[in-house]
Amino acid sequence: MAAKIIAELCQNHNGSLKTLGDMVNAVAEAGADYAKIQTMFADDLTFRERFEHGRIERAMPQVLRRPYHAEYDRLKSLDLDVDGHRAFLDLCRETGVKPLTTIFSRSRIPMVHDLGFDEVKVASYDCSSYPMIRELKEKFRYLFISTGATYDEEVQKTAETLKDYPYSFMHCVTVYPSPLTILNLTRMNYLRGFTHHVGFSDHTSVERDGLKAALVALWLGADIIERHFTILERGMTKDGPVSIDSQQLKSLVEYAGMSNDELERDHVSKIPEYYSMIGRKRPGLSHAERVNRDYYRGRFASKINGKTVFNWEETPDI
Image (cartoon, rainbow, N blue to C red):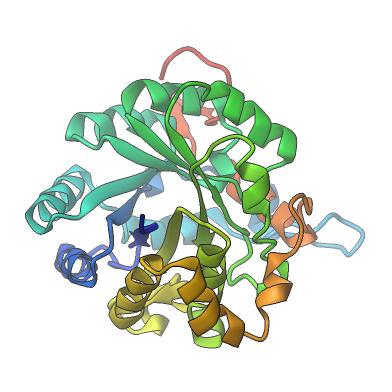
């Protein structure tokens, strides 16, 4: 059976419903299985003092500099409101593409459920947000869960939380773009100890590496490949450098239907770096991943009665 392909539209639509529609049509034409958006709202962005200035002295732990107001203004222009989500669902129905979204704050779960999504994605930084995951499994029939920047004990607890529930784990490396040498694609074998459905979310540089990482992941048995996708020039969006175009998406769909022998003979054997991508099953988090985790885990939260409630906090239902 061919591996499933998720085209991650992320915010490559630049807030334009026209561009979003053209993207869904391109995903359908390429033959991908899913088109995915992000249920991400600027109003859910959190203010955290330490990221306003980043590391001030070399003696301090490394901290990203991401001032709140500049990030809020950038994100606000990219929001897809409820009508935008509804338009996306309609487009997916019309084209036969399965709709998917990543929910970034718990307070948005009822909206996504009521709109009619029945499968959703969990971002890497929420793999250990157990209250959120419990709520998601009550609302949706299937979850795709990225495991980047997540410790082994957290992956294990998430698997225990999802016992007897259908889900996929998605291996990824939360460094953007990801060098081929740190992919550790054999970690998919570790994740198969929890679920038979394991995939790879690819954040490598398109210009530098093309589809190499996805090809090796497919050869190693990935059931799902998720790849950022754009129809715009790569310099026009923040995620452009890690986003493939329509022709590359068509090629990825074709590769997903190949046998292992075909992949090895015609493609993987011709990739000089393939062995360095295999890596280790339990590599631990790199310094860059820990720095990114520090910022992105908690980047969004629910705002309840003037209080910020993070996705991992054990609270009454939001």
